Image (cartoon, rainbow, N blue to C red):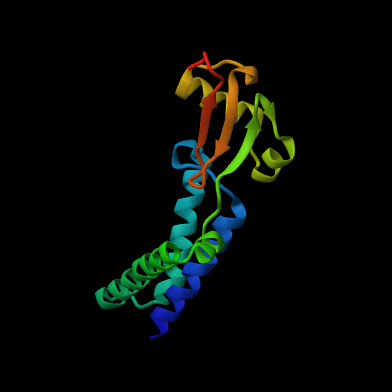
Length: 150
């Protein structure tokens, strides 16, 4: 039972830390982000198993973590209010070619990130070619070009 409690507490702690850290898609992670993730996983692993390296304990922890993830996604699917609490919402960060600086600062997104996404997805080179840019809940940036710039 101790392993289940440890896994549950750890799940919510890691969720909270990543929620505070903000959105960033896997494609946008840096080498340092990857190394940091490995360090976190090693730290969490040792905290979870508390010197019990048995196969049974490992399976119990895995089932608890994956089970919590499935349970919360099912609850989120059925309850929009809960889903909003657990997951972030998409956020408009450029409207009619004008960067929304306060929202960008809150999400720690800069103009270069938006323009990189615009170049990659549509070959756009400037903000005046962007009708909307949306920071998606998964951390990616969706670009909707002005008419005639697709």
